[in-house]
Amino acid sequence: MVHSARMSGRRLVLVVALALAVLGGAALATRAVRAGPFAPESHCWGAWAEDSGPRVLGADYARVAEESGSPHRGEQAVCVMAYGVPGTEEMQHPDTSVTGDRAREGTGGDRLVARVGPPPRSTGGPRRAWLAEALHGNTVPLPEGLPGVVSTDRGTLVLPEECDSGDVPLVVTVRSEGQVPELDSEREVTDLLLSLAETAREKAGCDGGRPTQLSAPVPTVPDGRPRSGGGPACRIAGMRFAPPAHGELAWYASAVGTRLQSCSLELSGDGDERDGGSEGNPGDGDDGQQGPGGKVAARGQFVVTSHPRLVRLFAGMAGERSPGDGWRGTGRIERRDGLVTAECRGRPTVFFLHLDGPLASSAEPDVRHLFARSADSVTERLGCPAVGPRS
Image 1 (tube, helix red, strand yellow):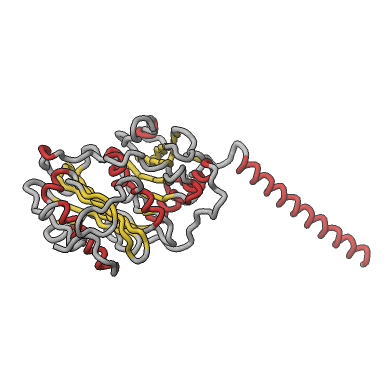
Image 2 (image 1 turned 120 degrees about the horizontal axis):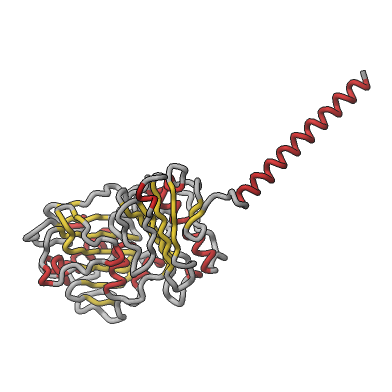
């Protein structure tokens, strides 16, 4: 019986040893597959790996990507990933062009366009067009104080200060383009954005700080449809326009918060091209885009933010002088736009407005008064002193 017990014990030891060997071999094989020729395919400098979460990276889609170069501080890098059903015509000849001023929307299929770089150094039209896309009104602020916004078709995140080039921040953006421009959820876009941000920090050599992480739920855009009709635009009491002679005025208003409020305006129809028309917003991919009532003829944007990293996006766009009598803070106000920086709730706060020609012409009673009344409507909500003169 002793001999039998010893044999049983030896068999048990052999079985356990064999099981451990098999498990160890399986683990080594798994690591070899992940690191070797069978590793998951990745795109956009390695930021987006297949089967890593968002559905567009899953097995239901084929993917092809093209990169303009690796991200560096102070420089622009673009990656375009075309995705679609395997074997379909658009995936036989996918549009992944990254050349030109911007990666333009292709004629078929769907694409994700990833950009890493600073805002345009020009503080005129190029910077305004960039802001129109980066801080579009059809977004919500990222939670946990992250400096950025997200919706179901775009996301923007300003990287930490250690990634700055001089006083210029490094920004990552994701934009969905194509026949079905929206992804499944704001959470999916946020996951793509955060993965891109981590890769950008590593490639740019500024990943020594706290990682960009997020544990809180991502809010959803309350209503992605444009609003229109009579009364003030953007849910801001002071923002009033005369009824357009042609077309329709519509607007997208972001979730109202204490650190960021943004609104994007669109005037559809032919507009009044004699007054300059739309600047085209070359960074927004809207050439010939149809608005609620037809082709977009003019655009506008109104932004209020006190987030320090978002405030940096407006650097250099206004001087250090007073905007004029009755105004608080510094900045400038011109025929079509204005930018004022003033303290609100103990923080430097940017108030920014831009209106294309036809919208500027319909501002009531003019752009200067509309800007003052709109800014003061926001400061009243926030419990801050008025920025513009009362009239």
